[in-house]
Length: 398
Image (tube, rainbow, N blue to C red; front, side, top):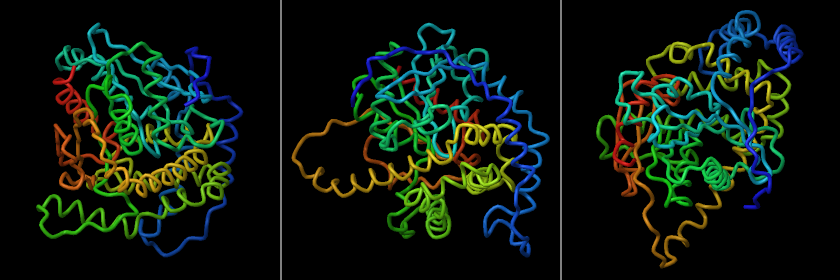
């Protein structure tokens, strides 16, 4: 990685120009809706009536300025790493001996996904928990997401490069030892941090992992426990019927990007469908699992920053890097070299997840939790469960 000479850490505030807000409202009002079809629920994607109502709320009921003020309560910064501006939240605990913890979001999300766990993690004493379990939290925006845009060159979809940048960021902040948590794409970043910065990473905690890569084989059901069988069936169903978004982002991000950059309604539908399919199965609609204003705050950030297109390009690059690693994996496994074990790993599995321990465990899993509620966005859906699990697991690795 080519390091920039500019290591300045610059304060950052979210400040969307009023002209951008007015443009959003105007575009939403002029949405060209498709002709209605007989009611098919969610089987063909986001229902027309549902999206019309949600888009109307985004235009006429949602208060961006109120949400912007909430976001700006958290100390935010930007620093250049390897030629790329990286935006991050950095909230220090009042407890001087708190453990530094870097949290990495996934797609389609932003670092503000974690805002409901920042207080419980940085100041557990104020939230009914033990002050000895406190963390200093660092929450970056993945390059190409949110305020880590625009991306200045190709290649930031490679998660190893992102992990290198995170290691540099933690060094730049003066943290010689830290823990890492990641979800979805961020789980991959967290795992790679343990590989490349293992001397400083005390432990890794993951959510939003999958039982197998989506383009791999279906999971065999024979021999699985009843809970694992249910997860495997959900995974196989997702693999057969839920990969349209991934195929597009992994093969034609440029073509898709025009729609996401030009139509806020298109960007809204693209993200909301993921929340409908990935949140707690007990939730009938996305906002039954995730606060509607918090959901629309994330969609708004994608819209204002143009991150719909750039995050799709990150998926394209990431999937190609993964495919290349799979091709080289057999050769690497037989290279005769001794590969040191990574840091201890904790995994939390929520109700909508498809993670199966027997398919994931490489011998490094030191902690495993399963919950009967929540889904792919636990920091938004069940922040209490996530914060408790992080505190309980990382207590041993301070």
